[in-house]
Image (cartoon, rainbow, N blue to C red; front, side, top):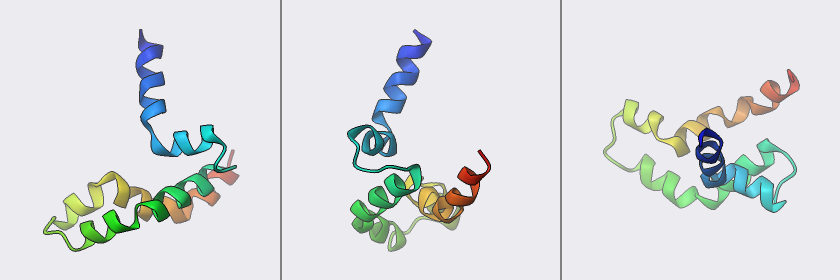
Length: 77
């Protein structure tokens, strides 16, 4: 059953969904597409009363903040 749980998690990941649909060729491209599609939510989070810690912990913001390093990380593989 562990595999079924992992599969469900992967299938619910928006970046994985973009890649599986063939809408992006790389993880970096999929992340960029996801961030662009959710720019309104990013702006709402920027304007929200979240603490800095809560803001940075939000999955969308964490992705945005880490997005710039993905190419470098991928090049190590």
